[in-house]
Each structure stands twice: as C-alpha cells, then as structure tokens.
Image (cartoon, rainbow, N blue to C red; front, top):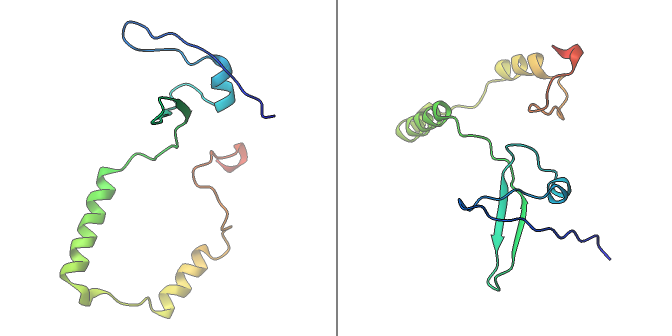
Length: 111
C-alpha cells in the first residue's frame, strides 16, 4: 500500500494557511515555491508543487513580434544558411556537449 500523508491546517481571518511540514517535505516545497490546487467535481481537492514557468521577457517578446511581422511582410528575405556560415557556427560550437543544462548553477571551477 502506498504511503499516505494526511495533515490539517487552519485558515486565518485573511484566508491564509501554513502548509504543514510533512506536506512541504513530501512535495519538496521551499520558500517562495508555488502550489497548484485542483478542485474536483465531487468537492475533493489536491495540491501539488506548481510547475515552474519562466517569466516572460517583454524585450524578447517585442523582438519576436518584430521578427514575425518582418517575415510576414517580407518573405523574400528568407534564405537558407550557406555552407560557409554553417562551417563557422560548427567551428564555434561544434564540440559543446548537447546535454548542458543552461539553468543549472556554475560549479566553483567553472566561474
């Protein structure tokens, strides 16, 4: 049988509560983490750790909108990459590991 954790918490006058430590530990929650709530038709509910969504960068979104409009207005500007440019790109990044996690912190010796 699966390990079931049950816990209770109390709502404050401002409808806030503290997530019990057993639940925080089971969900791997830390300070400032977000919680996802699901309420089912039968009145039961579940909580889970919310999936982290990276904040949208307004400058990047504006740039992507610009590119989209430019491509729509001038499709003749689209061109294949030539072999020389592909060779330059490969020379610059060809030996990089494909499995690099760019969001992971650097190790001490990688600074």
